[in-house]
Length: 380
Image (tube, rainbow, N blue to C red; front, top):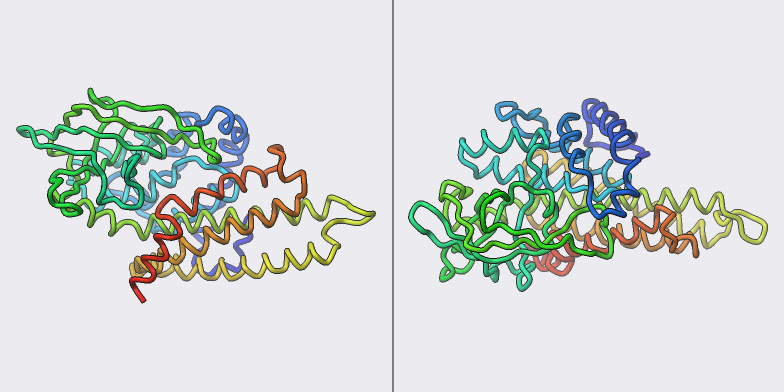
């Protein structure tokens, strides 16, 4: 269990909510973790159960069926999800997709989609990455051509979280290929439209319990009223929303790092070598001491960044620095904790094996560590 007694950002209300999240996860998530890992996808009814428990889109205003809470409540969910070692895509749904609709959607779009997202009736995804365009969003090739009152969409996306479950996808497409970044628009695409195709559930190194898919669009027709915001503003919208996405990744990374540390403590105190607990060897204690110090710094920094974001002043460079630092910490902690487990750490029956596998991708998605350094460098 995460020790939040020394945190500086959360209120009594946040901690009461945390207890609700923990009870829900103990009942509806933790018992299914291994099965979801084996089947490569969470159960569909976990979405509606999460919605009923108030765990989806908690900061959506009450006018659209939400709880109208601050982002700290999202952060509580992200931390607890990370700490239990789940890769369920509810954070992307709440922290990334919902804010786009809130910020740029029409009143009709908000009233139609947000209640369905809050209830879990409509799982969502955001489709930016393509086989030939990852961090370089300006290079996407999916196009949406005007045809009367509609857009005719052709192209493909890959590495899409929630790709198998999603009934609604925010699609980044070129509406004016000649304009580069200024020719990108965001379009809401329902998965039941003719021309929408799902590829396979991708076979990944880690995050086995999360569906990650290819998506295909062949002469897919949507009304222009499905566009989010103004035409040609998609790239700007993506840049505006990336700080919260990167902070959310940092939050989860820090929680996973703490869980890895706690697993290492538990294992080294229980396992004996040469007649004494592994914890008693100086190398073990010094390694753990170094990790504890880094975790202490991490939690302090996370509270600082979270506080700035909740105040509306976290910059893109600061969010990128948080994503860089905490995901690198996550990897270091998971790798060191696995090493302290010895051969047992390489066995899938131990939680550290899953934490270690899942940690590798966080330095890639949401912008690679190299891209984070570029963003930070530009602000210097």
